[in-house]
Image 1 (tube, one colour):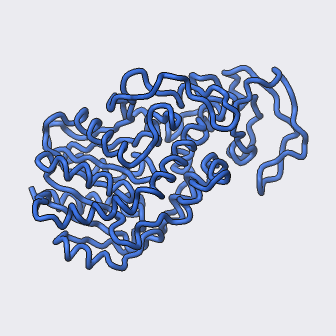
Image 2: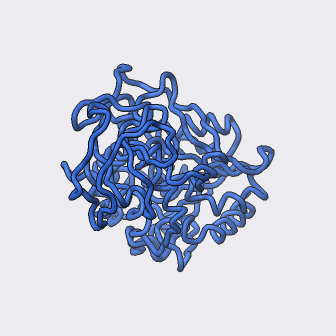
Length: 396
């Protein structure tokens, strides 16, 4: 099923439907009255076209491209996109053994079989990783928050790579990494993320000592990992992490994805799932070409939305416990990892109240960035890279 290209991006012309369309006839039309929210319909009907017809965007793509939820696998133009360029910079790395019965994943709405992007890997999960700099130099792992992508560190990596071996990756469920349907081998709990983090870091760095930078809501998971592998970690830098009791409740922008019924709809909306969560948390103003990178997973497969719903639900239940554990770890006398907190002062999700006191009690270095928000690496990427390099040089 396809629609002719227009001047607007395809997702603005038509809303994705939360089910596979494979059971429909080979050709059919929708009424002229069907249109997306807030956008006047500029075409009268949809028509099915064969894959490969360059003049059409496919909604019901085959497994090789999508799984019945996609616009031609998230392609928006005939030429290469920034998303394609980013994909070419990275590689797929297998880590963390998959579990489950081996049963084929089905969508939660109608029980229809989903495409390859929603299925569990045969042996281990595939992670999308980007590396830059010589492997002979000290290694820095850059870990994005929830929800985001490794792409958020695109401004940081080039500067760090001059003196360090910089590595970033997409968490399972995000970006180009595997996104198995929940209940079919990975349920996106914080405990599972902590276990999988150990696997991917071991695969990427073997026994090499590393420094870690963790942003936002991934920080408590990373701290748990670090507490169990202190001998492997030289430095730990946390970017706007949830630290205080006020931080244990998700902002409404994220908690909406775990709502009953409505969450199923919200998590399949690319504008709400990518644009809103990035722009509502701080001063970040996305360029359209960057926004397309973040939207692509949600346009490619329903699995991205289902993963987002699952992690939001898990966060709602487990975040308080993980934040409390973070404080215990960082205040423990046995904590030996050199740790700093970098805080974007214009964070609209996490209050700064109590952060200074927390860092003082834990004897952590605190660096403030007045012009950055929750996603520090997006708002002040180059400045952050300089701060990180300086911190690592002084701490060794």
